[in-house]
Amino acid sequence: MTGSSVERASMAGWSASERGVDHRRHLYLLLDDWSWGYSIREVDLKSDSDKPDKQIQGTIRSTGILLLPPPLSHVEAQRASPLFFAGAFDSKIIVGHPVAPTINSGTPTMLPSSLLPMFDVRIRSIVLGPRPMPHPVEPIYFAVGGRLFSLDVHSFLLLYPPQRAKPDGPPIGWTWFKLPGPPFQRNDVVSYAVHPDGLTIFVSIQESSSVATFSFDTAEDVIRSDGCGWKQQGEWVLPFTGRAYFDYELDAWVGLSRGHGTIGHLCSCDVVHADSDGTWRCQGLKVSKEKLFSQDLAERHVGATLVHMGGDNSKFCLVEGISFKDKWADNMSDETDHRFVDDRSVKCDENRVSDAMDCKLEEQNVSQPSHSLFRLTTFSLKYDKEGALTTGKSRRFRYYYLPEAISRSVLEYPVAFWL
Image 1: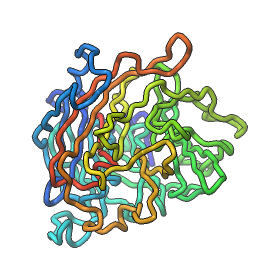
Image 2: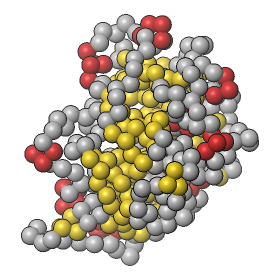
Image 3: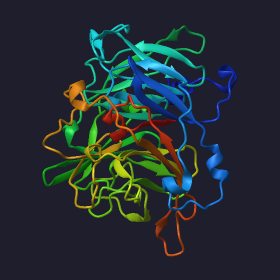
């Protein structure tokens, strides 16, 4: 492994001159409404910041329902398996699904088992890299320093983008690198975040009544050294559901709350020092005044994904799956027991199999009920005069009809990237 992390980061995406197209960021939604896999929809959220604040209730009655933009492209992958996607390298959607001889409804796959497809939203084309080994089972992805890290049931891997060992040397293609496995089980992970140093990964776990938080330094000189490994930060847990983000304006980590009585709210906490001696724990916990999940009695929450809209500003988009059909909806009361997978919350149900790889397609109801929607809430965060976390008057709402063909899994775990 040669070259500095800065050199590697510079190879992570196309430069503006190479892209040759508009590189303003958009929200990308992936829906499994295609017989061979997923459609990619590009949603422009720029106009939300120009709307007057007159839709605080955010109901269908006050906003109406929009049609989704037409598909930008399609990618072949197993339907009803949304957790295998990742957004990384500035402009790429990684399609990390394992490849089987047949895909969806017994259709023969066209994908070589050794290749990993990545859709580049800038150049509107597929880029191919090598597939990781072992094949992913239930991966958590971290885009850090122009690289992609995959924490899975049996592995912890690093994907390097194409690079040059020397400035004038030949390019080296996409490369996977095996890292030391974590001292915990993947299924015990409840929340995670990247430190504002841009290098350190934090992961919190809960096993029965025991909790702990670990960190991993991804700096290139550390990875190359014999001291590369996981460090326990203490017996405490980050207060989030799944992925949290660092908010530069708040100088805090921000994510969906996992605390009792606060499901559907956001929360923030102080950032723990990356070089902590293990006695430090996250402090300054604040829960948002507003509940972000829909509170309209006619709308049933199914699942949600929080997306940070990049840069140094405090802008976010909450993509929420909504259903009007009882058998599809989770009641999501504050007393509901939850376990957390990837970026989304999942209701515990002994009659459901939580591992997406173990669920048969027919058991996941790959047909979609009528009246299912995505509710998009864009907002910014701030602390008010009393120091409380609030969205103020920044919230803007959109509802989109969803195609009838999508699976329940895509409602539970909306796949959304800001690229």
